[in-house]
Every structure is written in structure tokens, then in C-alpha cells.
Image (cartoon, rainbow, N blue to C red):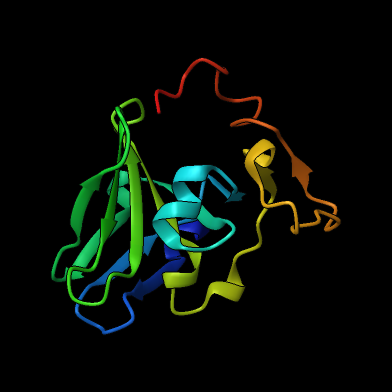
Length: 147
């Protein structure tokens, strides 16, 4: 018997519509990342990511292009409009992070935490009641990332 969570379907894609994806199931976690790499790659103060198992995500129209942004990470984006879509790390080959705001209904997901707040912009004030971590949080060793 299929679990009820198997019936949850999330769709999304890029600004120009060239790349589309489909996700089946619930996210493992949802959070705001304030790291310098996310800031630079997005041109924004932070990026909200939803983490899924790689087998939950299917690109149903075209594929993103990828840029290797660190020793272990790569970022997928639309080659036509530049929309940031996904992030994956070779350290976690069974997981993929999807930009929540590239989803068709981003308000259906609620973030749980902030990470890398040590590098957040000084004009960002975290008073939303979410857990905040100066680094990647308690689930990841502090020496894990190789920028």
C-alpha cells in the first residue's frame, strides 16, 4: 500500500519555462541558506532550499546546465533565463536541494531553519522564530564543507 506522502506532487521550473520538473513525496528538510556561495549564485541575501532524495526529482522538460561552485557542490540552472533550480553535493549523492521559489506553489512549503547565519547580510534580521545555525547546523560536521 502506498503511503499518503507518495501522493504529494510538487511541480516547478524556470522563469522562461524551458526547464520543468516534478517531485513526488515530501521534503526531508526546508531551510534558508545564508552562505556566501548561495548569495553570490542567486544575487540575493539567501536562498530557500528543499532537500529531497534524488529519486524523488524528475526533470520533465529539458535539463538544467550545471556549474561546479565548490570542491563538492554543483548548481543547476536554466541556460536560457538563468533561474537557479537545484544544488547537489558529491558528499550526499542521494540528495538534491531544490530552490523553493522555482516551485509553482512555493507557499505550500514552510522553512524550518536558517543556516550559515555567520555570513548573513547585516541588514537581515532573523526574528521569525526559526532555528538558526552559524554553520550548516547540527546534522553536518563543521569541517564537512570545502569551499
